[in-house]
Length: 398
Image 1 (spheres, rainbow, N blue to C red):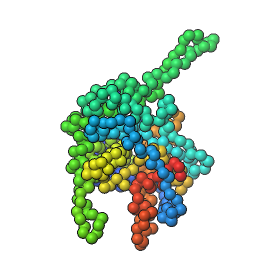
Image 2 (image 1 turned 90 degrees about the vertical axis):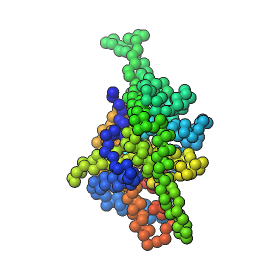
Image 3 (image 1 turned 120 degrees about the horizontal axis):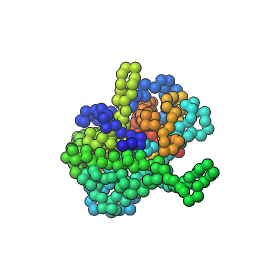
Image 4 (image 1 turned 120 degrees about the vertical axis):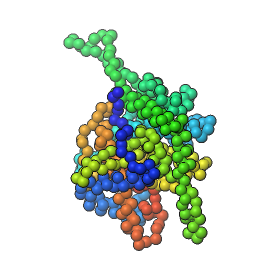
């Protein structure tokens, strides 16, 4: 089966399941960033931005409107488990193909006036996320219960139907030696057929993986892993150092990645010292954030993750202009794949995602150094979320 540019690798070598998967994302992307030469100018630009942010001269763009869909669904679910299954399926499908729009200058010098936008997905004026959300709503309204049994045997024809993906392109006239042949038209296979096949394959693979591991649905895996993820932490009240428990997004990410191959986003990179494994796990991170936003207030004991500020990849688009103007060579292949003329190959897409994590991590390190001898202030990047840092550095409204 010919699939479209899927983001995950079923055979990705994974860290130990008991380890901190968010820390693995950070460390591996930091290592990858270290393979890129000439970072001195970037560090200088990051220092300048950190100082401006600390002074309050700049603020990250407000991109929160991109994250409100979980609370605005036009549905009333019969129970929490059904809603968890719905959210998990949306994030899994959304993440199975490259879903971030990327703004890149054609030349790494950043000499172009306007950066080019890549990974634009438009199907009858709907972006990919809304295609996915509409399709999952259609499945739910068609009495699909999102159990592993019901999802395992979903067909490509079902995907075309539920997600309203065209099977064929619009009819075109047929020409012969004398011109247009009257009354004769021809339709070619839709350019979106491979996406439909990728969605079907990803759903079926996930359902089979859940069943093999003994879980009837996504919710069972999520609830069980969260009930086992609680750790003891010290209260912020230094007076009594009261011990409390907290749930970990990192533990849920580990469970998702180890059970479901579709969440295994990452790649191998050949370096002078050998092969390094670079981990992204972006879909699992977004799923954690979606669950946090939807349920942390109503069920804080289960969904109020103490490490939510460490989650990456929550923006829908990333502007690489800042790092390009700082002299970073993105070292992209300068090629595109079908669907449109500006769709990045998966190797380039993964490389950019790793750069985003690595640069954000470097910004936080620099800020911590700037503030090492001062009392922590509310504007210190060490005290703000990764999402805020990514918005500050890569937000498309900068």
